[in-house]
Length: 525
Image (cartoon, rainbow, N blue to C red; front, side):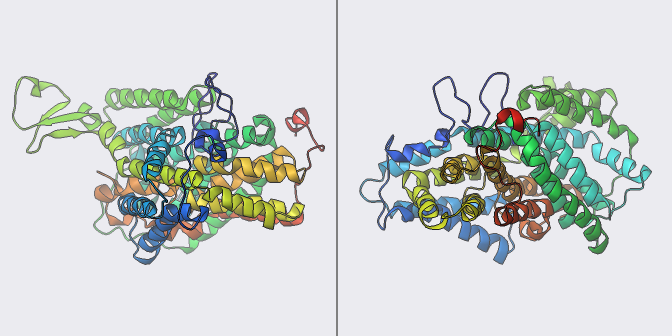
């Protein structure tokens, strides 16, 4: 995901103190407000009943994706709506506080951050696509002798590098599914494995990037410096990345490619590789400290300029107004005559393709807020603190499994991280566990599981590229659409990262206590 710099707080975390005095303990997402500062909701059956909306949504998602094999955000939106309505019938007294909490959740900045990242990244990726960047990738793969078997491993590495550079796993997923995915499938890569490899690369970047908001939230909520956190978590990231890379090489040779009979074909075109510069502009601008929206905006400007300068696309491919009759303005390059009026082009389709996912995100964050206001989240954490975390080893396992549980419910990874961060801090401080260790446990799970579950934001944003208006399915054929449930076992880096921290909690690998190292020492590690 993303973050805001230039002196402001991270875009989604609420971690650094803001101008209006918000604290770094997750209060932006409402966690501290369960202690009485703001409306609370009382449920028949107690605090646990506040989990009804989000629990219903998860069951709906499992049934839709896993049992029926129906992917996509559209059906999940209905599940979230029904779950939210269902929760009302368990409210004691007036439903007003419940209804107000829905609005409160939808206005959280963490949801807006994900939405903005999707809109901008979508416009950028679609503009590169109409500019023949996919054709350029096929040309490069052919020149470098990169075939379908090795393409998933290469996509994992390259997506990881992009996500690390720009600090947004969601943005990297959109770009790679839009551009690298069709190129790889047309070269013979297995679609499911390739999609999973892209998601694994996004996990790597979200977990390790210094400018990622998951990195920043994990650091500031655990009282640790960002540089030290990144340095201390590098060993975990590499331990997960190396076997993941090997796994993609092996499975790329084992799993068959898609049957592309009747699918659209692409010709190799070296000119499309000019958009490597467009992507470079985004990376360099983001790493230089500019806001990710500014960085991607510059990328869009450069991409449009290259499209027109090198004849890679027409003006109407980027933006077009379709009118029903010829008139004064139809001579303009961005006005066309057609049977149906409307707006089109890469800027339009790149943004509107994510509208169902945007609605779903707002609903998920509002359901999480209901659980927080109703005390369900507090009940889960109290149970973990009092009944489970009784030794250092069990405390760390509680952090790992607790963050995994919350990520299964709150599928926007930064939102989940903000929600559970105060409790990870409480558990860690109770057992004198170093803030850097706590931050690494917190971030690894939220980064990994946000790209594994079929209903997770990272997975759905890639799937939406496949099935959205003018998506990959409509452009190249049904083989370009992957059911999110099929991807789950192949997101190797995500699973390995979670497994490493489970083993680290059990064995004590990398465990440090508060007196062991201070900020200055960690920053040199």
